[in-house]
Image 1: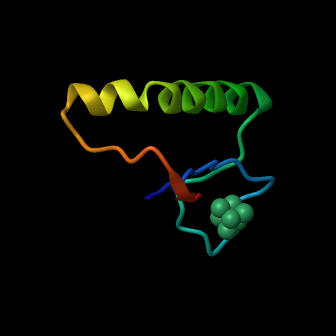
Image 2 (image 1 turned 90 degrees about the vertical axis):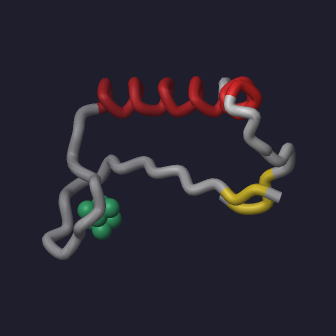
Length: 62
Ligand code: SF4
């Protein structure tokens, strides 16, 4: 099984106590971020194969 952590670091406002790498950005940047994230997921298998890394086929947590 495989667990994924996917960060979408786009906030309505930046909380004063927060140390996450997050911030308030525009819709265009969010759209580009999500497009890039989807592309990375789509190519994960090929990247793992090129590194001869084991990538489980089933995800049990996100
Ligand atoms: S805690 Fe951090 S990541 Fe969560 S909403 Fe506030 S600024 Fe964003």
